[in-house]
Image (cartoon, rainbow, N blue to C red; front, top):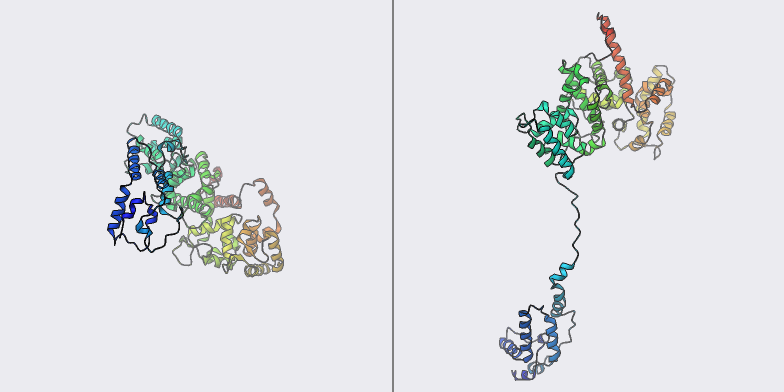
Length: 536
């Protein structure tokens, strides 16, 4: 092959070297000859010299500009080896399709000057909004807390004992005083009996307890490590401290068996109202949505325990326990169907009692088959005596919804009302036909869909509790029909009291009077000198 023809050529365009039929691997001498010819060109020497000078003077190198000048000055001449070949010339390539031109076009934009980057505005930083271990306290709040801690610990260099720790609980942590022992033991993990200043700061400040809301503080204080919920046992230390320190419960100190029953009843009431999911585990969300924290704060300020009607009233415990004791004939601390049918002077129907013992509304905690424990009874009486509350509506809705389809149909209501109708006939009471009752029920509830009632329909109506009384509680059904003026006036005078509050108030007076009469009959001469109170 004659390659002398390249003497007439000033420069070769690499794009035009991509000719079919020529293999560089098969003819390595061709590539070497072409490269030697390219290096011998004067334009190539000027290009190399220019690049070296630019590098020495630290001037940004513009490769594309030099190559463009090189191409312009050289034209499009081809060596004779390509002109004489039998292969037709390639079609002109567009700059967009050529990898070489693509690299040349993007190269200058990618090689940005450091000065240009410095002139660009800094990105705005988004403040941190999630903290795995809780939001840290503000600087001012932290300094104020540490100053107060330093003052309170100044006279106790070695630390505080559990009986000296209540001031820290109240003044620094702003927690109810009966949580003092729980907080103390939470910090004193090694059971040394002493909490030092540094140990308190580490737990309350460094672990961000200081910045939490009150509900979150109490929740983290009571729950076990690693748990994301509260169990019944988590409230036991709180009730133990309350029984020891609260002046309204001082009379129970000599009766430990009733101290235990009181604590259990309070816990059952808390879970009945707060644990709406019915899992037996109170979440932080449930705790915040309930009124337990407000009741704890009121309890810490009120010496009369019976004025704290939410959860902690001793009178309410007394009513629940005595009603259970009256039904438990053999006092084995269990009641069966025959016992429960006597509740409220035989107010309930057999069919509703069967549904309760089928454990449809709530699974029994009793391990004895066919019998209800004290905890199960506490849930029952709270649901029975306050049918306006949402836990009660859910309890009885499950009982009436026989097929579990989420709605109460006329056939299901008729099934329960048939026994009511029969009982009215037995006591020579003028019976009310089911057709009339059904119209009355739909008028009171005003359901969204015809001929069926959903749980949401019941929760939206203020008369929902009367529906259940009509279906299975004859005594309350008759009371509703007669509309006792005394009860109506009582409700208007105390609109904040619930049906349960009014029932417990009436029942406690009755039980107290019965106890006084029993003591008089037993020869107690000084009974009338004592105020009405608990027999325990």
